[in-house]
Image (cartoon, rainbow, N blue to C red; front, top):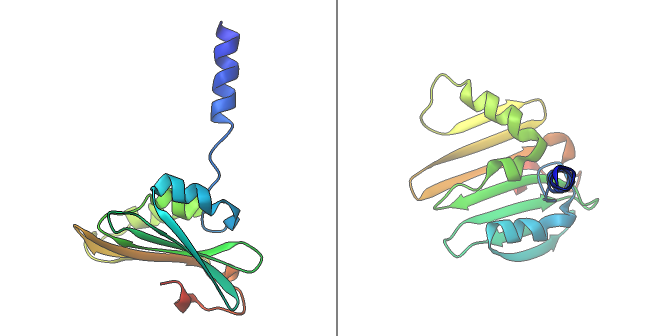
Length: 147
């Protein structure tokens, strides 16, 4: 019995859900759509693709992918904050440490750590932000497209 429980625990813990986080593959945008319980609309533009997920409550999350399929930027806007650990992926821990280290805790947050830039602001029922990795932005786009 103990062995069976151990095997089940290893299988469950070893299969983290795939997601289209910053710096990762855009192939799994469908999983983000399910996690956010939203509707997906993708638009292919010259040099990049925008995957927009919209929830019924008005939250909109955009994931910007390069032609190679790597998410180089994400943005969000709506009445609630999305799960930034999901959107920022491997960059979340660095962002969280930098945001907590701020002396001034009110107002917009801008974090720059190496190539990572995260800007977030808002108040009750109105949040917005964007994050991008400079080195992942394709030559055919700019950081300004991440809106």
